[in-house]
Amino acid sequence: MMFLPAWSLGIAPAEGTCGDRADGDLGVADQDQLVRMPVHVVHKPSFLDMVLPPLHEAFGGHLDVDGSVVITELSPALGAPNRSLHQAPINVIAEAAAMAGLQRTTGTADFQVNHWTIQFIKPGSVGPFRARATVRPSRDGRWYGVDVDVVDEGQDRRLIANISALFSHADGAG
Image (cartoon, rainbow, N blue to C red; front, top):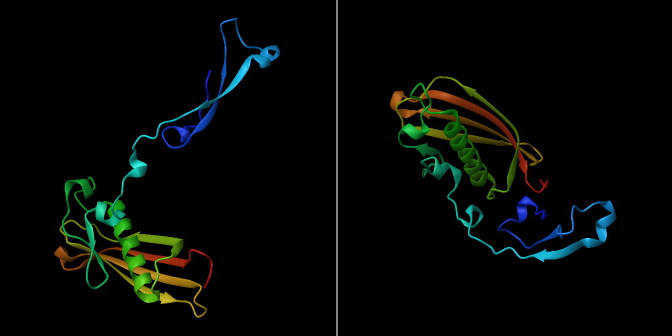
């Protein structure tokens, strides 16, 4: 019987344990029959090798010249059952707008989120949908409060979601 850790399949060489069962079941007394042999796994291309676009682009969004993130239209893939923009793309473009705002304010995108609160206000069903961030650094520069508004521009800039987030430098520095 051979055991391979799941992470080794197609990713890295591993070592397995085999036993010769021709003489019967291997019991505790038969441990000397166990043979350690290397298992050579041939690397196969997988999803780990693919170069993927930023998540907001995968959801059909793009970074606008003013630093906001925009999803141009409501596609069936992005719609919720009530034919409005689903909460996943709302969160994704809000996070991208927050990160763009942080990079614009500080010159780096090396941040981690410490707190994320989202309020869904009204459904957005027309588009384009725009997420715009406002960044407020703490006095010591260790923390950054970020507010993001997501609006449906096709419905008179209707506010569909509001996000309050708290970020810190990913390396813990300030």
